Length: 125
Image (tube, rainbow, N blue to C red; front, side, top):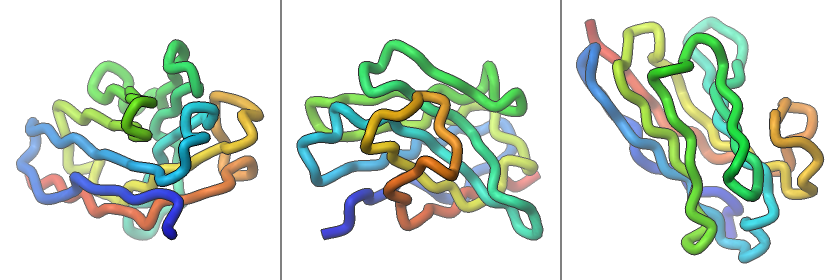
């Protein structure tokens, strides 16, 4: 069974909003630090946001602060990324990521245990 399943990507005009979801099948999800990364065409993967297993601490890349919000609902094993004020430079494939050992809430790629399959977000100008 796929550990992480993403949904919610799509095509939106600049200034619009999208909400990404990432669901896990394991009940231990509530102990996982979770994050979102993205990879734009021709660019390296970059950190977007992350949230501690408890939900009380979040981190954001400077490029999305004030526009994006990460949240989680441990009752349904899901983490969300609400994206507002989208800009063409937000166009990328977005991946959710799980640190299942709870190493650190400010997730870096080297501690990711599970990656989602990726969902395309395209912002038109």
